[in-house]
Image (cartoon, rainbow over all chains, first blue to last red; front, side, top):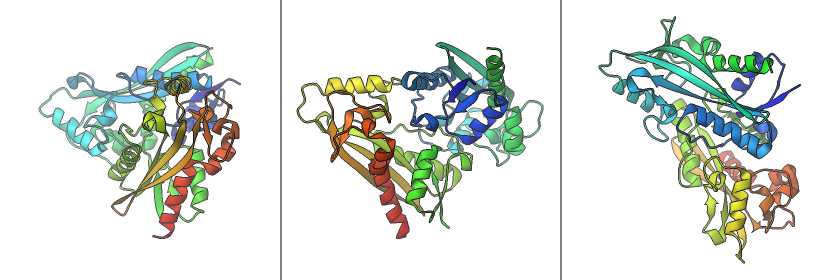
Length: 192
Length: 192
């Protein structure tokens, strides 16, 4: 069976991708290859960040690998905060500060369209591939809901009336940008 | 029983600290509190990096928390690479590039003393504490051994003749800077 490293130690992410891959590919975590967690993630795009992580594993450990990165892209803000989603309000600031900054930037804006975007970068047999998962939606005018993290209380996905934070993790994980990118990865791997 | 979050998802680190804490304190990982792994780690010292991670968890999730950071400090290089150990040769470069840079910087240097240093930052009942684990040793003139990661093939701990990479993970983990910092944390927590 083909083995791939997934550049994470998050058991939720590992379980999610293992379910999507239906046990057809063996997944190893960072800790299983004795790789430290603090892989640099300092690029200017989601694609480059994901590639940076996958290349780090391939270059240092020799394993074929995939890695993910996710950001919230708001149309009226020229796709900000994007790759800087985790540090929108500054380094080491809280989710709360990030949400408050987003609401402030969006004050008076009629166009509230936004999307969550996950990129998965794969290195397989010396070649690099990128898979993208998108969930379109809009930014609310105030926070709603308590589940999830980050911008979840401010994002309503298309086709729903509730925010990700109101929908909860079970529904979010079913329809999420990361799940969609994972399914594209699986489809690609199954046809190799 | 007191519960603390350890800002990691690395199962080896979680198991190590759980053993050190002898089951007297319940440890939760980042994934158990549904916190993403990519907490900013962009400070200029090991202490500030560890504190940054612990504060992120405390501020966003409200839990008392501890976090660690580790660096290699070389006396003749004014304690470089230190907090920049993972990116000594530049962002997203390999362990190999880092080791080659270190060997180059150390060419002709008689003083080869170095130390691995782990800092654990703890936030408990609104107060911040820092615990330090040190392993003194020296930098070899060439790589030796294949276990471990990072600078392990270039570092011989005092009292041994082999590098960390030759000694292997079992011995390294027993005498390591991280284990020492963990023991200080445990001693502190047991007397609270």
